[in-house]
Amino acid sequence: MASVKITVRKNGPYRVEAPEGTIELVDADGNKYDLTGKPAFSLCRCGGSVNKPFCDGTHSKIGFQGAEIAVRKADESQTPKL
Ligand code: FES
Image (cartoon, rainbow, N blue to C red; front, side):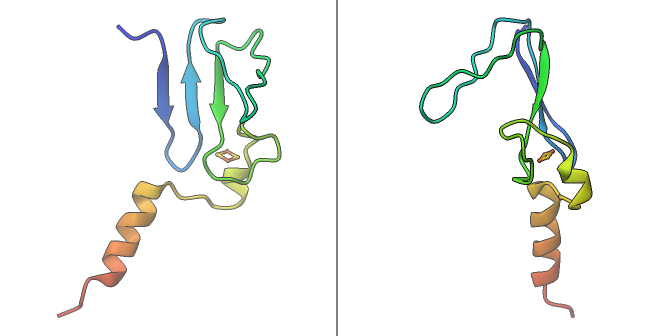
């Protein structure tokens, strides 16, 4: 069984759950984020968080829709009506 679980939340962040100390999260320069005391955290995928890479709840305020829903809606709008 995997020790890390990542859940894609509907219209929300990626929820990461793992035993404390088993995940290393770094920025583009290799600097580590302090995950002390965080066996779970959420990563922003809407782009709106002011606390990136973490989710701060902004996705709810901006009406973020996960790609799976946005793509489905785009496909529906491009389907010719007969
Ligand atoms: S996913 Fe929550 S603020 Fe972006």
